[in-house]
Length: 122
Image (cartoon, rainbow, N blue to C red; front, top):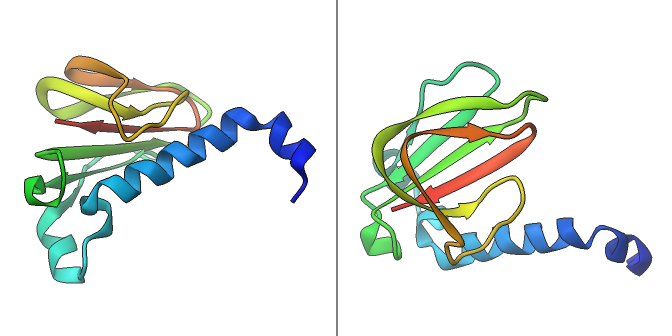
């Protein structure tokens, strides 16, 4: 491993560690079979190239009732309407990722930064 390269990219290293932590602490990201995935995962209808899905009815699989995952692979900001108007805990955005919420947003819209991932939970 190139430790100098790691040190130069420590923000990215910490972000990836946060994404791994989110996955490890939420069984909803590790559903055991295709039947459970079909039951609990629902893709959103979003304009290309955006990707979004929800993990619902997952309270028994962790701390959250519902998790939303939104991906913006484009080089432009994108405004996305959420499935419901609610108070959401932010687990990941374009700057930080953590299994513990580090901020909250309210409402039914979120602005996705370019080339970013957003993970919301309630």
